[in-house]
Amino acid sequence: MQSETVNLSEFSGNHVIVDLSQPIRLGRHYIMQLITSLDIRNAEYLSRNRFISYHHQLRLIFSLGEQVKNVLEIGIFNSLFTTFLKQNNYNVTTADIDPNLNPDLILDLTTDFSLPKDKFDAIVLFQVLEHFPYEQSEQALAKLAAATKKFLVISIPYNTQYLAFQIKTSFSGRPRHLLFNIPKFWSTKPVCNEHYWEMGLKGYPKQRILDSVAKAGLTIKQEFIDPTYPYHYFLVLEK
Image (cartoon, rainbow, N blue to C red; front, side, top):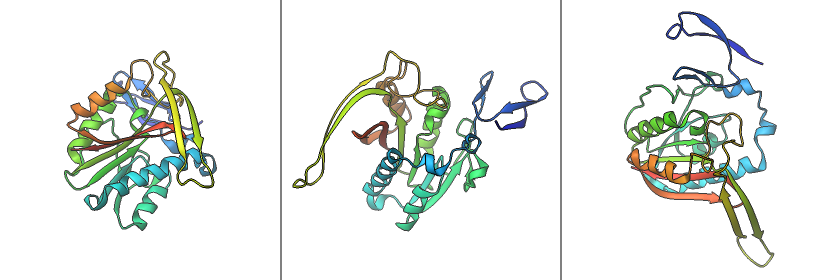
């Protein structure tokens, strides 16, 4: 277990020891956990499903064509996504709350942060917003919408009960898929313990997320779910 001394003078005038492997709430304030405190190894993190997600992250950025040259990636663990983009002549800036990941920018989305306006053609954050309470996620979404020049590309967890079929033959081209899924609206338990919320759970229907998108002044250009891994729900949002 990793602990760190944090100055909480604005709350109590004292110093306390907190465990950064779990999110901690003090009144309306949250201390965000650092991913490097979780001892996640690349061999465990880079699963088949994770590579499916990487594929779609890149595909969606590429689909935006010449409109996107400068990209801000928020929430990093390894450099794969950034490396692929740079190899395809994108200018990429990285941002994260965890200084141990050596991002270009230290950024805490739960604070009253600011970013240079219209510098980035696309701001991307995949599986990030669910790591803090929904009200703060919604506020961060609005701030990012104001900062991006054109696009905001995100993925969020979609908690469902599902049944998926794939048909692939030697004489056909792309495989065909059939997906049946039902949001787990009766449950409040996320798949991941580090998540405050997940789309599909009780209190977080898809429409609530779409309403937050509209409230931020964004429109949906693309939305996508991969039937082979329907837990990640992708949205390409446009100003």
